[in-house]
Amino acid sequence: QLQFVESGGALVQPGGSLRLSCAASGFTLAGYAIGWFRQAPGKEREGVSCITENSAVTNYADPVKDRFTISRDDARNTVFLQMNSLKPGDTAVYYCGATISYDRCSDQAGEYEYWGQGTQVTVSS
Image (tube, rainbow, N blue to C red; front, side):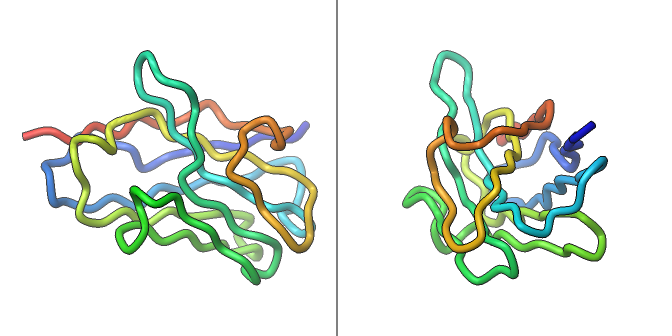
């Protein structure tokens, strides 16, 4: 059974940093593009960042460019999201998703088949 477990979410002050992890079990990440998404209360799930197999392509949503960095370690079957200079607007539940893709990744949640349960990130003083 394909599963993701997200971790690393926490309460952090504005300007702080967090590193989210997305650990896959039941399958290997090879051949999958992975996306990080977030959903704030009352809002739709939105794409944050994504990465293709072999890290050949990475994409970032405009609000997080130059602050967030996505990476993957296929040997550990894990994808990471390093988040720096956090703002209150980054507060949301963060999810990772997977889709079979070798050379592109999408910011559209509907294109991802497999999801984790999410991890809460709260940015507040």
